[in-house]
Length: 241
Image (cartoon, rainbow, N blue to C red; front, top):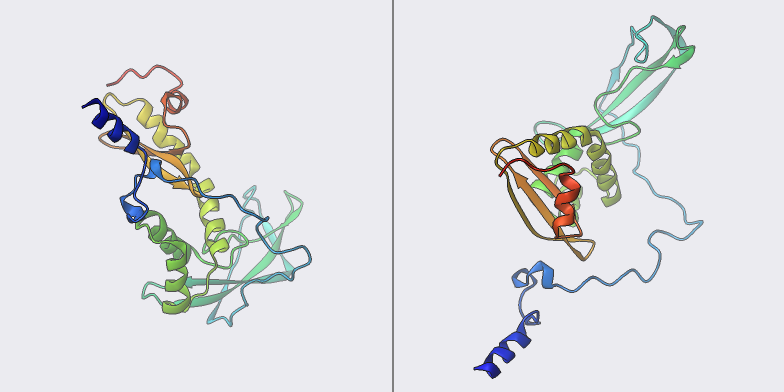
């Protein structure tokens, strides 16, 4: 009996190399190997960016009040144009040229412009396109390569992996105050359920923590699985169950 227990103990932590990766627990998977070389192109390599498409229509903008101080403004003789590509409600791509005139604010003593709300600042891709890609990736689990296939070939809307990631990170910073607000709500609940599961981050095992109450759910990805994560989330004593 003792011999059999020793044999079974020796199998703990070992996996069958012929088994599909989906049948292997995340915390048993080996860590991914590090990069052999620095990512990115070599210095001096010519940059690449999306080609400027031909606009379908022109959208004029006006400004009546300064967006910083709400003071009166006077129109200047200069303006600029901005191209924004997006996906319409019927899934067709659209290209709009936004004509943005400049105004002078006597109170702020500087030139101001109308705010274009169809895309993030300095972004050529609109909110619809990036939100659809984000929903596919974070809610439906679609890989980045599959998203690029859908956009580039089926929707005829060229996007890049780096462009998607940059837009999602910027969106995360905008939504951070709501994310922190959910944590504050969780901390004051009377009944709270906590659980964690393995989560791979760049080939390394981390943990996806889930804290759920009746009205709110808070997610956190952390490389640790122990009580240190809870101490970070609950800096004061948790008075609930």
